[in-house]
Length: 236
Image 1 (spheres, one colour):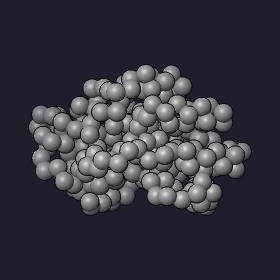
Image 2: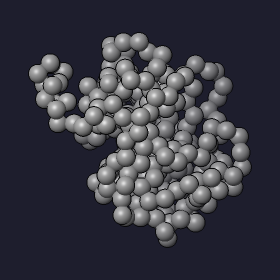
Image 3: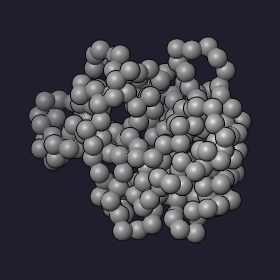
Image 4: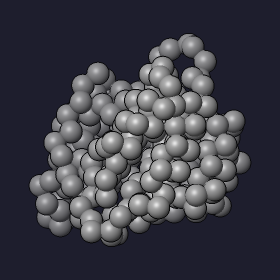
């Protein structure tokens, strides 16, 4: 971004929009955003899409570029069913371990090239890791950085009931919920963790809360309220 254009871009934003991260939305509507990281996955993402369709729920998928390149048909299936897609980097590194704008830019742009973002510029840092430098880099790349307010900790071994209870107790209007349709480990060799317990937990949540809340994409949630910004400095 050229200097003059960058200055104009900054002037139109509040300090919070420049340095902080969206974690939830203030809204008077009974709306909740389910978000899924680390996919797409050839087995579990289609199963998740079938489950969401049963409850007429929409979600936002923060995809890893390398996986999206492997499974373009799954990416298209997500789009065709009316869900939103966000950028989760090309290879899922911790952004606090990258040192230069060039490195951040490569991770973001390479992922961008394989995703059909339909104009959406939503980014979630891998592992949630972020510092001020990486946050500013994303700002200048014109992305809204999105964290979360509710998490199931579905990367930890637990029963579906335990996960569901945690979510049901935390979810409220305007929540942004973190889940995973895959578990990506860029620096580890073990296979993808089984997502079946997460799917079972999500079914319990949707059974319990679908009459109380409407589950929508992040763009829909943001249009129906005011984003809450938080200083989100998470280290590796």
